[in-house]
Image (tube, rainbow, N blue to C red; front, side, top):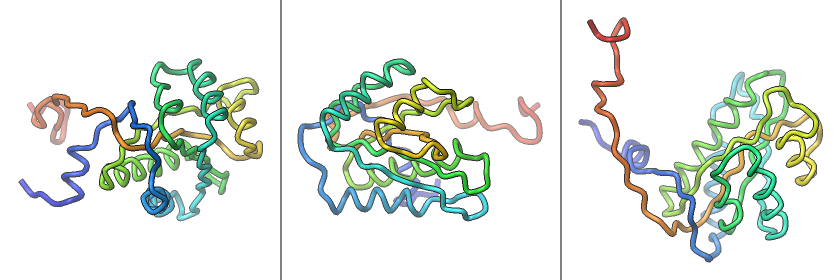
Length: 180
């Protein structure tokens, strides 16, 4: 099996929901933001806007709000930083994918720097008023025409998660599903 630093990071990275009560070094935060900035985008439009949230009161409000869409909210409250990943229109409807690529790159970068992260989707497919996305955008001062896709709690991990995976042969199919 071919192995290198990127493949190792992909294999070893796991979502981290518990964080130590320690700050993230500015240099590491900047490297994580750079990873999002350098993500691929549809038509090379580079649609990202990142909001770094350190304010405890704001994080607690986001924590309470996001409980409406998921049970995986604790990291927002206990991570020293949460990064909001917002996407400008840029002439494309691929805002979910644009945000996911940036969030994934940022989570991999965090792992490579001995930080932990996970991404929590907050977008509303219909972009309705009163949705979690809409309310979070107000809290963060985002313009109406920008989509808020993901929140990325970020910090020094206070847990080690192990998991098992299906065998690769059980999930890869050639030419047709089932390999028959």
